[in-house]
Image (cartoon, rainbow, N blue to C red):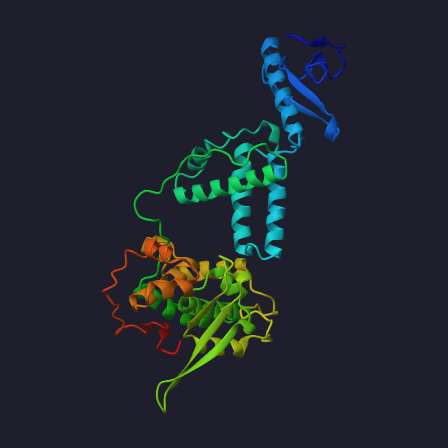
Length: 418
């Protein structure tokens, strides 16, 4: 306990003692139950740093405080911020930075929604909003996976691993902006065993049920607004299954991204194909791509009830001409799926908008479209296609003779005129 000086007590600070020639002061408070605190004046940044030493033993308090002061002096010398910034405040700043990245087309709105959900629901609560960054060590997240599994026993390992990636993105952001002295934290090493986790996909029979149910569902209301919304969802679904775009990409498609390709089969028969040119800023991987598919009948139907069809207008809009939102589409989906008898309780799997993309890719593979071409159309890697669709028996073609649609390399064609 060298280099210490006892100071006079005050109303708020008791048992005060200086260490390192006044660079730090340890003390108790009337409310601390004898536990010691440390405060350090950061001259370079013009503010106090305070921290609980979590001990009521003076000897231990000195040892802990001396080490803390040495760490602070080292961090200040290296240009790091020593402040009262909390973990929650850093996460908020990180999310604001992600919003800027959306504005500058570095990430999609969908990705921001996912990251915000991870941060607010799980990552901030794990350490607590008010925990100061100065109290966080690289080992702070070693038990994060345990925390997630306790709160949700059904959480997937791949979900936890993705959240750990976000945690280290936040940590790197904190390090880059001089809030933290380390670039990453340690997390549980999660290895996905067995098959790659796959989201549920429609079978051809289930998709046929959905088609027939949608036709009835649209007619099964007398409210004009509801009828419009249901029709919009039906055409969204039919186009989505044919183009297998991602959900966010579908919502962001505009009329100026669509061109038409006329295919003449013979002198009396021709067919119009859709050619979507998706710009990089609406694609998840930030790479522009072209998607060619059938589905012109659905586009022509949308034109009949859509009130805005200028080049820069969205294809999928509400009755008042605004871009349709995720909330409305998911609300309608959650009405339609039970209506069609395809809810989890009845078929034992949870179908989602992603299931349409999954189904569209599967159909192209069944139609023997080369994997490389499918990966280009889907905007994903060949390795992803191989890993997630290796269960498909490529020698087996779907028998669609008894169904109201047929599958070829150009898409899923609804032969019944739906």
